[in-house]
Image (cartoon, rainbow, N blue to C red; front, side, top):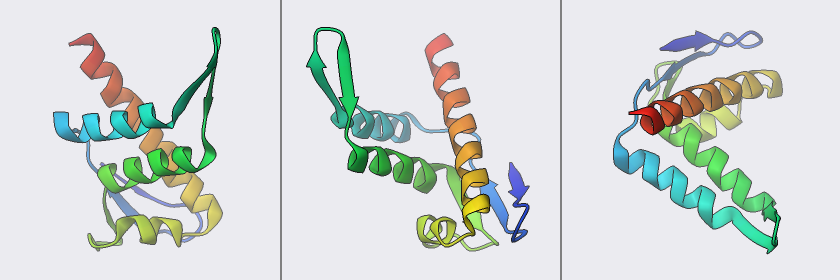
Amino acid sequence: MEIITKQSEAKIVFKTDLTGGEYQDIQDITMSAIQVTGEDSIQMQGSSLADVRNKKIETLVVSVNGETAGVLEKVRALPASDYNEVLAKVEELFNGLSNEKKTE
């Protein structure tokens, strides 16, 4: 799957499937970011949220403008509107893949 970002017209290629290990790595980072603060409340640490987001980008983005090395840095270097567009697609893909794994 690929998109062309609206502002800079960067070509972003995404994975459409995760291995069990990739999925577990993301889940491990997510779970380490969660802190139970009371009987009915949890908090997520801000720096850990960034770690989760970055791991999803590293795992699901295959290439930026045909380049496969350093995809996280390349995505982070995009204009903010393009970055947000890529991040929205990463979240959409991850959530879809997560739901597939839960229903299988």
